[in-house]
Length: 352
Image 1 (cartoon, rainbow, N blue to C red):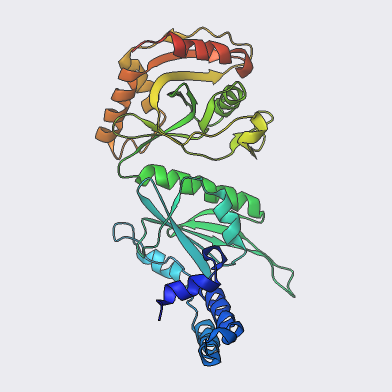
Image 2 (tube, one colour):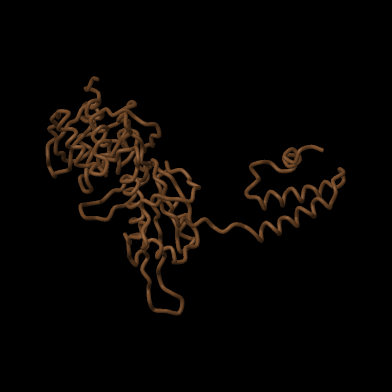
């Protein structure tokens, strides 16, 4: 008799195996339908019986609940006592993050908000666990419960507006990955790629880096990030993909805008650093860039590093390499669209 795999393949194509129960169902029906070819109906009947058993003992949803001993606290044990109905794990730049929810409807919403580079993690021990509680009105009650998000045992977001709590989830996923990454260095920066080189634009929130990144992408640069420049120990720059967060005016709420709306595309390969642009928006400012020394460049980037105090040697080593390989310019700027071509020219003028 042929091996089971060959017999299965005869009846069911691999792309049709949505899950184990579906697979068994199709095989059982195939056995029964092909009785005239010599297969026994008993085999199909036995498989249908097995389907009922597997459905009865289907595994519970994965719910992350175990932190690495370096991060575990008694308060986290108390949070574990709440009812968490579903969850999943991901890994990003060496950080294992568990995500769990009080309402399964949140799972697809949270997955969509993660950077595209994250990978599934199927282990049981996590460096970081984000717990999201869905509030709202209770049936038969006038009370409205808060939506909440916890980072490990610490509440980091609470609001009657779910969108605000989800924004907190985004922020703390990114921030804790940046702080806890064992090998990478994170800078608050926008990043685009041009001709195989990275243009790094360090800057805090409200400095205008997202606007400048969007204009560079609109002009043909490849999008890498508007939030973090991720560096390895060779100074190479990795992507942190997410929609560009734009504000209509100072003080306005950020709105995520897909890269496609700027006519751009996202890069996936790491890049060598080519240009560091230290700038911030000032109304009616003129673009008068000055080239900085390596020391001044390192200092400018260090002001925007994440976790530099916790891993100073690794951070300084990566920034020294970037300052050595890339030219650094600094200037106030006015409207972003007016300086895009000048930035491209600065990248082209620099020779290794």
